[in-house]
Image (spheres, rainbow, N blue to C red):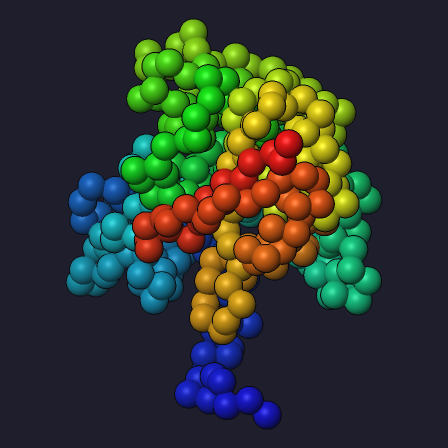
Length: 340
């Protein structure tokens, strides 16, 4: 038996097992705009309850619980203050994860009731629960597509934000962000490079969300929005960006997508992957939690650098480098070139 975790206690195991209760508490804190109302100062429970129209006693019990996870602080008997950590669940704050919280709880939570079946069969819990794939379900209703686009944009603006610090794309006039959703990644990458043009390519019902992003002055007129299915084909470009796209798909599907890029790419095209890179050691890493999400929700997976290298090589790409990224970022950038 491994001694790893020997310093943990039974109480800590109970806390882990009850993690779903904390998730629901955080969801209520976010969905009911409690975080937003609390942002900016110490608030009395009765004031918060009145402003968000909730039960005062239930609210106090919720807030006391959330002191235990660092989201709020209790100040005396009836007053509470939101922490900087908790403020990430408020609307309009820098690096807000409010949309991600809503997305996770409104799209991921119920399917994970079937996660035992996923481990038994290897089939995504989402498919088992809903009888269709996550992507089919999302695109069936515009509101769902908007929810997911907003959630992923909040990840780009917060958790993924540091990965691009000081980074410049490989040379190339035309950059295509494949699976580019709301255009937040491409906008950031070419904002300060006026000679570059870009294409945000995603499903028609998804890419429409990019209109607001690409209307900002720095990129207006330089980014086109193109709707389509990347398994059918992609636009021609000099540089292709795939930001947290390959992890959604199994190796065979990744091969099809990369094959569509190969067919459309200009000679010597470069590929830029933004993904979490799974370590091969024991330390905690964001990719390990994310891989659990992939297992339950889709048919994709997080990969080690060697696994990414193999997937790219099978499609005709040679990995050039793993770009150094800030230690605060759980994401990595892999650059590759289409072999002659």
